Amino acid sequence: MTHLLTVKITRFAALFFLLMTVFHTLSVAQVRFGKYFHDRTLRLSYTISGDSTCCKADFEAWQVLGHWAGARRGLDVCNDKSSMEVVIREKSTRRVIYHKSFSSLFCEWQSMNFDEPSGDFNEGVMIPFPKRPSVVSIIRNYGAGHADTLFNVSVDLPKPPLHDCERPEYEVVTLHAAITRRCIDIVFLPEGYTENEMDKFLEATKKMTKGLFEYEPFSHHFKSISISAVLAPSPESGIDIPSEGIERKTLMDFSYDTFGIERYIGTRNYWAVSRLASNTRWDHAIILVNSDRYGGGGILNYYSVFPGGNPQVTELFIHEFGHAFANLPDEYEEPGNPIVPNRESDRDCIMKTLDTHFYCDECKAKVESVIRGR
Image 1 (cartoon, helix red, strand yellow):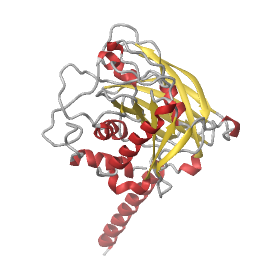
Image 2 (image 1 turned 135 degrees about the vertical axis):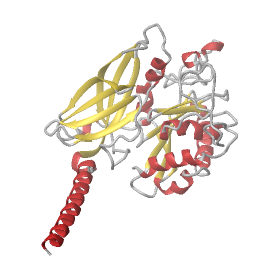
Image 3 (image 1 turned 30 degrees about the vertical axis):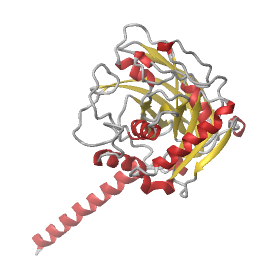
Image 4 (image 1 turned 180 degrees about the vertical axis):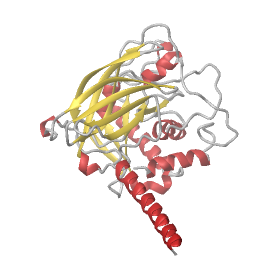
């Protein structure tokens, strides 16, 4: 009888310990947004430069913006590692209260192993505004467990100053309004569209908004996706195409021929991208360049870009947004392109060919996990 009672007590103790462990794990892992953050966005700007083996970054400025448009749960958990990370720790407890991965154009430049120095890339990141004194760290991951902290910056203001919040500079058009509060905020930005070409830009954004909800799993989440467009005209029409000797004055300095790849569109001036996007609430910036020439680019939690006048603009949107939104890889081999570790896949998927008008099951699952992780 005593032996049986001992066994029961032992099992109860084991179960109790297991439950307490789970409870402790959940309580540690979960950071409640309202407890640790103001409903404001902090835009942190920095410059980064280097060579193929190392880099340095210098903090430039931070600015308080309007309501926070990013995730509100799982804030301290970084599930998708990438080449860059931003980490926020409370000063008093050293607890990580925010952790997010992203990539950048500089990281892609660095992966190409150029011999000459890179020159400056103007980059940045958006984070929620912490309620208590905290330290923000920008980290460069090199793989194989090697990482460098590029810089730390303190955020000591106990309350975000209202006067630092930017006022909208350009008109914003709502293309699709979310019904739920916890939503994904997508903003379309025009590059190389003049004042007289805003209707052309809007027509392309409406086409893509309609097209987005024809793809799974976005079609199942139309209530939790908000889409807007900023009407910001450029001084000149079109964008730079260095290989053809074409130069244009535009707002964000996008160009074809990035890193010598004719169809790759990019800019070193991410500050201009985030400044234009910040005319409204935004989570993901989508740039339409005023061209019909094939090309584009998508960088994780950074931006997506493609030509608004190309006949396959919707397919380019879905493909490049897959890179930037869910870190989906290209599923095709392309000799001579060292930017992305491509993989040849026998699956039909728009990440393999634009003629396939859907994501494969694996890509759909990855997109779905990002959506539900908010």
